[in-house]
Length: 172
Image (cartoon, rainbow, N blue to C red; front, side):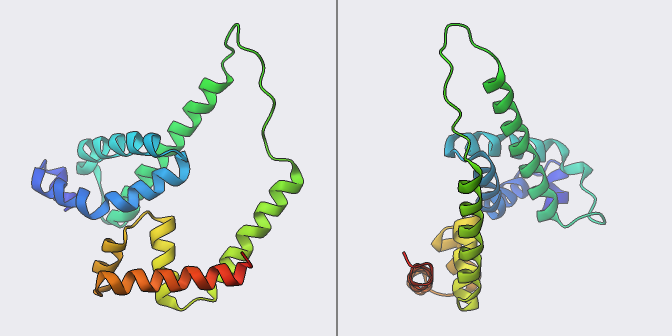
């Protein structure tokens, strides 16, 4: 599909979008942290893909790796641009207190992340994979059910049971 997109095949591009947009949105959202920004970046990502698909070399990377790299780089570019905008002085605006986390908060956050991953690793493989894909990659329950070839209700149950086990493991 990516090679056909490089040949300016609109139908191939449509199919590529349908198959990859959830994953690429998850990547941009995770980096941007804002839904609207992630959607804007994703738009730029697909414009780039349309323009540069002809440069894709299958021998160098898998299609999803190539696409994910473009999404990641565009989101990082957006993030850097935001930092530059924030760093520019604006006259007449009072200084705002630094809200950067202190060291103890950073350590606590790292410990919580480690605990979460330990708890995730303790789940059944299908629950763990479904939760990671849904929450870290941005896939919907319908996408997950289709990928695993199970009914939507089954997928929702897997995720719900997994989340309950996570909650118990984390002591929340």
